[in-house]
Length: 169
Figure 1 (cartoon, rainbow, N blue to C red):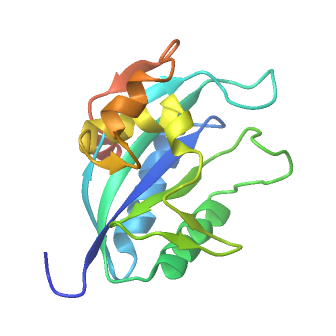
Figure 2 (tube, rainbow, N blue to C red):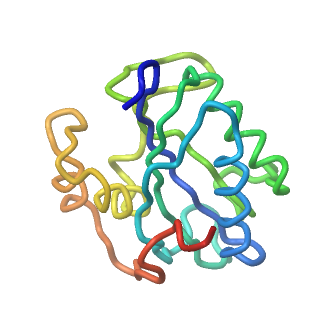
């Protein structure tokens, strides 16, 4: 990896509109950003909605990136992409066009009002762990690997719909 570049993992999710187009546009905007290279991506999984009832099923995936950005800058980029693609934050855990969550940034532990790394609830959510396990199954998150955390949650209703999120580009 080039000097000054670090690895980060970003979750993508969405359940409004044309999910494939939203993922494609989000990936395009991230790839065009200065200081960020998309290295690889998980499969895409269709998952049951999390949050208020009556929502459509989500698409979820994870990408690994190399970046020279600092964590707050990378979070800002993700928020800019979300906003540019019509993300609304009116309902907590409500439907969304696109959601980009910064999960991990190398092995950094970071806690500010705006950002906590590693993502504080990812080990409880199969819709995050399933695609993350495609990329880094043996990565330790606390005392367990990503794969071991995945075994501890239910994968009921999760279906693989694409072999790679990068095929959306």
